[in-house]
Amino acid sequence: MFSNLTKRLNATFKRIRGQGRLTEDNIKEAMREVRVALLEADVALPVVKEFTDIVKERALGQEVMQSLSPGQAMLKIVNEELVKTMGEANESLDLSAAPPVVILLAGLQGSGKTTTVAKLSRLLIERHKKSVMVVSADVYRPAAIDQLQTLAGEVGAEFSPSSVDQKPVDIVKRAIAAASKQFSDVLIIDTAGRLHIDDEMMAEIRQIHQIAKPAETLFVVDSMTGQDAANTAKVFNDALPLTGVVLTKTDGDARGGAALSIRQITGKPIKFLGIGEKTDALEPFHPDRVASRLLGMGDALSLVEEIERKVDKEKAEKLAKKISKGKGFDLDDYSDQLNQMMDMGGMNAMMDKIPGMADVPQSLKNNVNDKDFSRQIALINSMTKKEKIFPTLINGSRRKRIAAGAGLQVQDVNKLMKQYKQAQKMMKKMSKGGMAKMMRGLKGRTGQGQGFPFQ
Image (cartoon, rainbow, N blue to C red):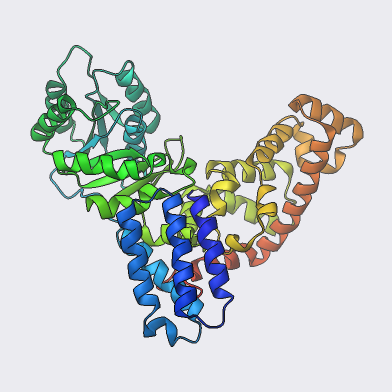
């Protein structure tokens, strides 16, 4: 996420940290590089100008010039200003209204509204223990209603039926009545998108808003459209009283322009980031954590939260007991670990959250390939139960059979066995308290101010 901007900022601040003394000249030079990096990331020009002006003014002040570590002091300023630009703190959904709390989603066609309805439903059901009903008021896009019905079934949300021959306002009225009758905590309304902003679209959505009286009106926008995302959000905000923004497809956005522009241009907070296609790929937006990632310092708190939320605790406890009793870490266990890692988005998704990854050479990062994990899982699935429990049985002829069963090469089996043995050694260390120490270390970098290596 936002990898191009992170690389540019890292290169700039690495040079600053390497200088024992900052001068007006090298601060101005650094700010020129930051300005170029932000413009290349498609951050809106007024936002770039205001951000660099404030940072330069603060950097030229006593706060930096009289610091024992001026490079680190300047980095601290940049971090603080990035957080301010994006909105200070996470702004959660307002669910305090009498149920059903209505959430209205608006946006252009193709922005990912329907999948966001499903992701938001799942988040509210799993993390907030809410009962959720969803309804589609999109009577124009073919199969939009069927798509939402399918997704609702996947995430466990109630679906209020609608059809293309109904008026959107009537659909919404009926859904509100159904949600009240079924005592649903939340009703999420998926509205129609268009390929561009038009008067007809705005009139319809204003009418729906008037009827629904939503507690939250969220604008869903594709982050890869850069500063255009911020400009479109402003047009919608002028027509509707938006309460927040959901940035979708951030996993494919190497620039980050939308994340840095939206708050400043619209005055509305980004509330969520869509980080993938799966229905669990929605994250609350924390400006401080995103700023930390942008500056290459990782996001340990989000990583810990994700591990605690997604790792199967029962399986983990069983595995810990098994290893502590002297029983080996077999290939079945290794396959479980790989599957859980893939459930968290794979190593590539986790890398930008690991503190210190910015200092790892790109050549080493490029060697991490989630497809390798998928291949390893396929190879283990090609083994017999006995081979998984007793890996020492896997000789040359068995390796050929396993490779053929997975449609891969013997070299792939050899690579799997080598990496499995490394994982086996690591698990032995973790069984002696290594994992607990690692988690404590990560949490230790996420407290008030502790996450910043230059405070």
